[in-house]
Length: 59
Image (cartoon, rainbow, N blue to C red):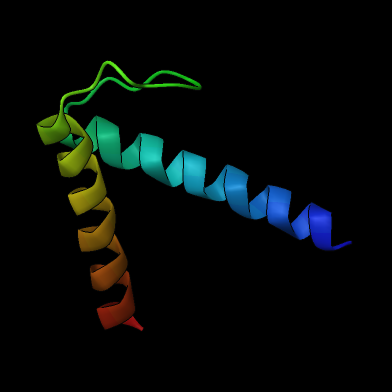
């Protein structure tokens, strides 16, 4: 049962990452994205953190 929850969590984070990337205009593909610049990768991560903070404030 633990593996099922872990897989669902990974899938949710992947969807969240893709959503954040589309919001900042970064084209991610499934799997490895080593061709991204540091700026692009950082903007995706920053957008994810911003959305998590906003969601926490709403609670």
